[in-house]
Image 1 (cartoon, rainbow, N blue to C red):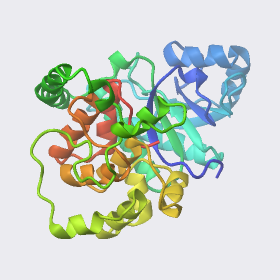
Image 2: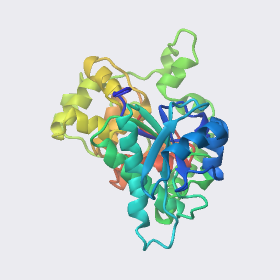
Image 3: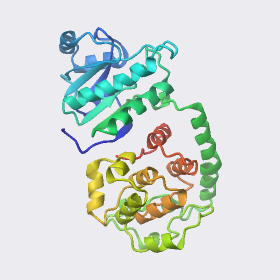
Image 4: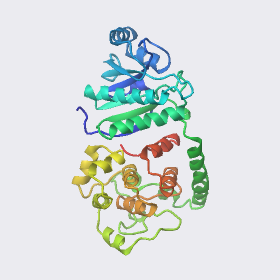
Length: 358
């Protein structure tokens, strides 16, 4: 399969007609005629006359099913047209039909050797499907497919403000941020002399210096167990854990943890929303240094507690800081023992933060 090294699901804010992927998905009507919304945008960008002729030859299409055409003037190779259900209150099989839209589209993409696909949030526009439920069904169907297939899947959201989280989750995260991030951020204001560097990660500091090496006074000893530790009560480590970690690099610690958790490599990188190519780099190079998002993605995949997460991050030169909203959101999910990486990414996306994985 083309692009077969990829697996993850990524939520992005973009215009779907500009996505440079193998296939984009169109929210079609059953007659496959040019419509409004996303459908109208795709037709207009692809070339309405050519695309309509192709759709007339391919159609009609039943709700929950999908057909494929060329993409014509789009950057993509193909357009997959799927017919989403009209919301009728939830008791008319809408969830199953919406689930089928994603699954049939993904299998059609795989049959046509697509390594990457971009979806809109199907049925959430004029078809009236509640956005929160539409999102959960989308994520559920896509992740179900990705458990057994390798593909890069994008969920394209045009407007971040329309990205709806559940009220319960949104409220819980908001309260946690208010209780932790805001207070800590204010405390940081009283330490202006060092705060600008304290709030940066080591890799970001390196980028600020032409020789990629920050001044020595900014670099704490890598062997320090307290390197960049977030304020608060530390959880207890066992002596055995401390001794194991003394000379480990990030890849060595990660591979040890995967073994200790009884996971296969494939389970670990799929749960981390990481592609196989990147995992191969980590496995083959004991000195490989990941991005912070990648390191945290593996901590989530391995269901590490807060203390273990800090230890793993420490190996890559990072930590969790209460003065960083991204870190506070991650801390919220870990302390709640909630390790669904796609749910975490939904929250990170909503708050304008970097999502986990690739």
